Length: 115
Length: 110
Image (cartoon, rainbow over all chains, first blue to last red; front, side):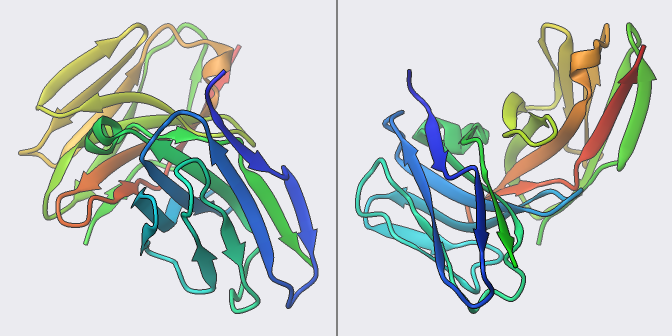
């Protein structure tokens, strides 16, 4: 079955540690995205990538980093510079047609808690 | 910049019809999308309006009026499983980014 996987589902880290969230898709989609969602809030874009080896900052990129070395993978690193990293992180992907229509396919999310 | 406003919460009973509004301020966008998200789950795409008017997909319909900077999602024959958060979203002309609304939490009661 095609889809997007994110791991782990729950992640706990101590303050000051960097942590990398995994996102893999086998949908053959060109575009991939990372969003952050805080309780009762909408989705805010962290980074996005429309092709391999290229990515752009979203609205809240500070304290985060990404790489896009393979079409299938778009890992997100939450660095110690991110002041309030506890949140629900969602990865998404879309086709070029989906980019036009706004149709994105989301993974199940990773809930990160920084202690 | 872009901003999309939605009511924070809407309640209704099973079998009823509910309308979730989305008003926006934007300099230009391609179309209006709607997503559903159950608690703790991933958002799922519901609909897209490229043009003004009503788009119907089963029990759900979506409407867009660019002249009024307004859209809505209409849910008919409500079921308990429709209890979720609903987000409108637009794709910005200039940045190609998808901008999400503030979200509306729908609670359906028996």
